[in-house]
Length: 300
Image (cartoon, rainbow, N blue to C red):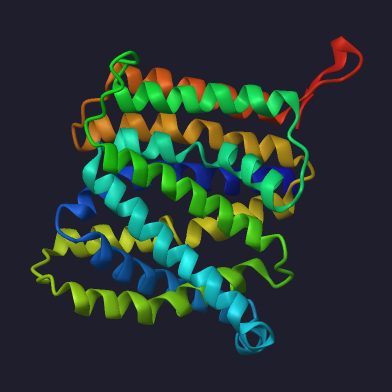
């Protein structure tokens, strides 16, 4: 029964994450990246606070923060503040299909950063994974014109790659976090909100937002930053086969490309699909465990 529930939660999380690239583009049609971050963070913080209170963990929020305030300040400044401002700006400058696919290489970035900051060994298959994934990024960014190395938006590509560094860095810092994961994420949003509000005031953009814009940004706050994270954690907690649940995430970018093409009519360049396949191949190579007995290899 738990495995069925884990699979249901995992599939729900993947399907919701598959919609966020489309939601990003719809939201950015009316919001600036800073406005989008501020409102979506407020929605996420509210939802996560309700979840914590419903789970009887409300009394842990203040004590968790006061135990290590500078640590949670740093986490909040990285994610959601810096990470999502940079990611949303990348989506603003690039087609959503390109920004999403490049951002998906963050797991490869994590391997390299873990070697530098945590002293973890890089295996031969990790180098192969890096080569495949970053070659995929180049294919996407240049639209297949590899010899010319010309980018439609070099700044946008740079921001998308920078977002992978921030996201990987956030999870490396989280290796030292022993607190409840939902409380940890909630504290990040609570820390980021005052800074996001100040950035909105400094930016001075008009708030001429339609009801469709408010619905879109609320959806982003709920399902990119809030509820989906809880669904995914619940799936991993219930399952006895983490690999089976984790591998569901490989379907997300392909579903996302389909939704981008169908809902907002974005043209998906063939090189984006090729690049995505290369990145996925890199992730699969990275996760594959090679057994000494060739007939009994298995996924991790």
